[in-house]
Figure 1 (cartoon, rainbow, N blue to C red):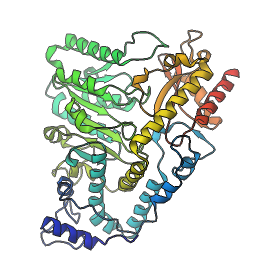
Figure 2 (cartoon, rainbow, N blue to C red; figure 1 turned 30 degrees about the horizontal axis):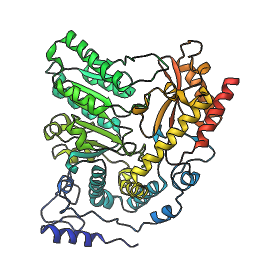
Figure 3 (spheres, rainbow, N blue to C red; figure 1 turned 180 degrees about the horizontal axis):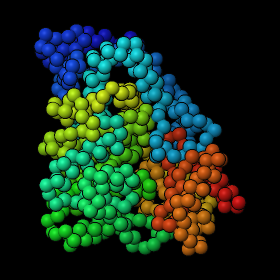
Figure 4 (cartoon, rainbow, N blue to C red; figure 1 turned 180 degrees about the vertical axis):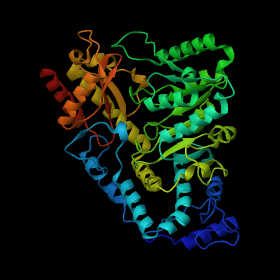
Length: 497
């Protein structure tokens, strides 16, 4: 299909808004965008209402036809055809580690390639006149998908790490230098986030919440354990540093923990923090598509910042995340300075973050294609399918390793209500996990087993948690029960050796 020309697109905007829309044809009003980019100001475009906004058209003819993907669809869950046709994973591997770095959709990767080819045909045209309006479009689509009421509450960034750095650096500038504040973070938080907290806010100001389980392994962690442990830690902080210390302090939460695959009750925990006057930052790296996100609901429950990656469960090419912050005062204080400062620093939230230098932005430009794919599949159907696969996988491993599906909950690290739709931490057979001999396992034991699995072309992480070994399984639409049967058998082979 031949796309609508840019001139027609801009004329459509002129007719609709009744104002001059500067772009490829230029304007006599001087530069409207950030720096010396040609075209309309991205902050302005991002702030338009749905009625006023006119999406930009593709400036090239695409060869991607989503209907061909639809024709090739088999029932979601256990479809090798999806793995081969819709992703780019090697079929010779048992790949059950999507939760690590994702795996790009073929159609989204092809769209990024189309943009890259268009870019190289005339680089100045791409960067000066096409890129920024298209980034606005991607942001607006993704903002709507995560339930943000307005796109002005969101901005595209390269990854969650970039966003977490921006928030923590801004928080330290705003509060840690002039006030007595602390950062509260759970002990199973992502390692780099712990590092950021210590570097930006100071070692003495970072407190880790140690989870106190009601019962020891093999009993799983419950929501009550988490809430109790947080309240206990906050009490300790107040006793050590004074009752007023928590006001304007920062609570960092994972929506889904990376190491332990727990879905945290962030609304309940955020409410606890708000009772103390704290700010709440959520590392939602595993949130997008994996969970049914509703940013406005989370904000109403006390979440101030939420950052999520697109390359994980949403399966875009790597290089895109989205950061949400509804509070304009926080946008203009903590988020006043991005991790990388560039042309848009003094021109609103979107402008100060969206351009961070000359790099490959094509992942962000592939977002509309990835979103079209998931809308075609049905996000709710995808989550249900992944949940079904996950439940079957847990039963397979539980029965093969522990010989009884009735003790299902005892072989999981998390209580069933704390599972996300796509990941779980499953305890290895007792003689391997260390439970049978009451043996304390180490990360060296975990690495040895993971290397064995890798040599057998199985990609899955082995985790050492509380001195016991677990496997963290991932389930996406291309996984099938046979993947987990093979995992079970190969681990038993390791056991026999």
